[in-house]
Image (cartoon, rainbow, N blue to C red; front, side, top):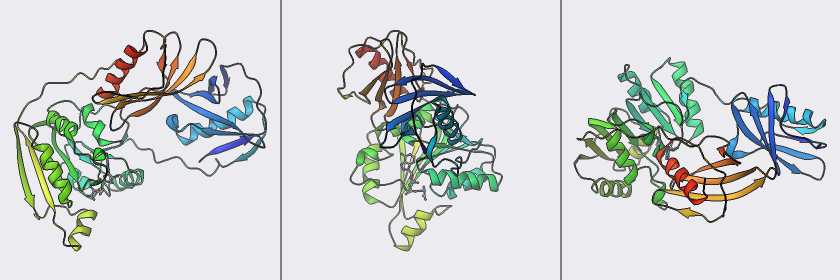
Length: 367
Ligand SMILES: C[S@@+](CC[C@H](N)C(=O)[O-])C[C@H]1O[C@@H](n2cnc3c(N)ncnc32)[C@H](O)[C@@H]1O
């Protein structure tokens, strides 16, 4: 973990600027920092010798900003750096094909969830040169590997996003996709709630698929197959096709492995037959009034949660609230700068469940 240790801290009147690094406020052990338009927090901890300066996990920026902020913070405090491990740390791969959840996903035609080695996604991209494909993965090394491959093979119609797929479909317009592929999802036999296929995901698949668009689940797990079939059957007006041990155009790394072990392989292909209404996605995450009467009770609503975890005092008028809120399966960790007109220190992902949580937060605490 990149960090530095400095020998002293000075009393600072915030805000302050060192070069292009803005130091916005101090909220107990957290320092608000802004470089260009990126806001993040540094955390300070007193050690036996000196002060440890490290990044806050929730708001971690790119490594080059972190290095800049550490050095500027030492300078701001006229401090000597007693230890640092930041010199050799390289930036993660940057790519125009790597999107974030708040980027526009209006032009996507085909989605693959959990693409792993990317073999199938690359095959699809080559077969459909005029379409835009979105690969969604939570595993960083798989993302980096795919970005390297598409750069090497000069493939330009794949976009990649590092996020939980269960949230991403809600960002895609209705009746847009020709296919969604979920091949060999993690079975999560002991943690059903972590499975990609669930009622919400199928609902969003039906909404985002065009008429005749398909959701293709392929799995080696009989348990996952039975579970998924039951979930699909909870819906009306869908067509389902089931296969067992039918070879597929591309054999993924997982498929190769299961084939060698003579395991059964199941497909469920859901064909969408309905047009869905457009969704509202112009969500306003602003507040009108300072949040008051805060409490630390975790609250669970139908599809979302709200949990204020900690409040860090800045001064008599301002504080920083750390909270978890949003989609029940994939809540976000966020900070709110609570003042006359509060604001999220870093914007939440603009998805429906976060928005519902935001509205509820305002209702609960008079915001
Ligand atoms: C068993 S691997 C299969 C990979 C690939 N589809 C194949 O057939 O070789 C499952 C992949 O799904 C990814 N994954 C699991 N849960 C996910 C989620 N909620 N959103 C996106 N990706 C997920 C994992 O990181 C992993 O790469």
